Image (cartoon, rainbow, N blue to C red):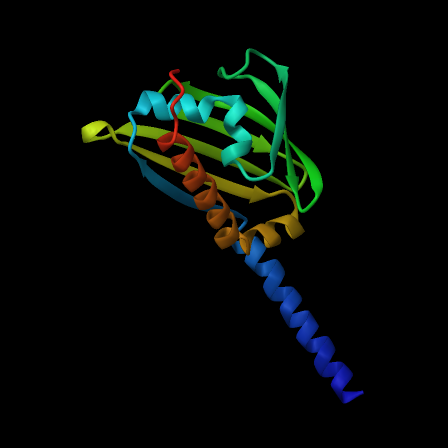
Length: 176
């Protein structure tokens, strides 16, 4: 009986820590960047090519335009991705577009919402610095708590995606 009380106490303590972390850190943010050996207009074109999205975004399957004009401010699309064998859908709303410089989007799903921004800054010698910024908030107390523990894995996934994009851009031979 004594061990059961200790076990229950430990469970309650861990549960309290889990929920308090979500309460005090309901939103996570992370930045990633890559430097590509191509000019901004070519890097932008490769990134924007919908046929190449599955090559650099892990799990990407397809998009379906819901409203507006594709790839323009205010357009809404459903984005389908596969994660661990399960298909998920996110609602994507384009918030800002400045060709060759900026793309800002909001993603919404039952579990969480994300603000995502990717910028292209041309450097000297035809290189381009590509930087992404993500801010994610869980929807509901359990989701907030789970998201608060996911910063490292979400950043690692974005780093992997951007490194795949870098490779794709630098190997590009298509004239856009």
